Length: 149
Length: 138
Image (cartoon, rainbow over all chains, first blue to last red):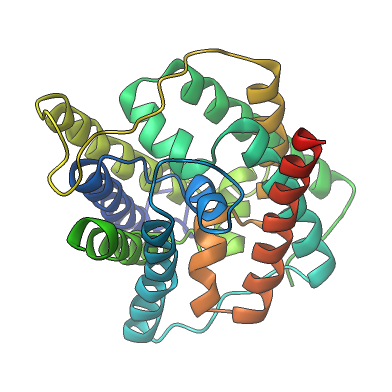
């Protein structure tokens, strides 16, 4: 299925992927009583936060992430997508790391788990990072900064 | 054992599968979504919508439970403060997300798709987190 006017959009794949992400977060919430916020779980695994999630559990979740991605990409047989060059990956990674630590979360923690709970903090955080994300791409396009091949 | 290991690894794997199916591990797809003034790709709105709607239901179930199925207690964020730190951090996160089209979940999941690029992003992200932590402890 496609959306008129947006030939590249994949709404059904997007919805299916989103529901799976929601189910995964629900399994963490109902199963072990914790938020599936990936930045927080990563920080916990590497000893960079003091959340009450057992460190072993944080590592289990982090090992699961690429495992699930591997299974899907192996089954689909799609070629790997293009990624930015190392200089941009380093810059982006540093800013994402600093931002998620200061802002106490990322797309999964605030966007998925927090907004669905109608958390005012998470709604404000999500609106904020969407706006700066839109602005960043717009500015990069305006000055002709190509990040992806 | 089930709660500490099996549930998190299954959740992580389903999460990683969802990210990949939804296109979040494709930086061009993410940047296409953030490109609202250009050639906009609405796919990520469907990812976010599907995930949030599913979790709205999960929170309803959670509110009826005394404790999680495989753990002793719920440990959930209870802060409601809107601080400059929260907003500044979220603002920075959005900038980083947009630069390379990657956020923490897809960055980690992509270790199985494009290991070298993903590893550069993930290590840099951890360094950024560590820098904030070191600064706070100084």
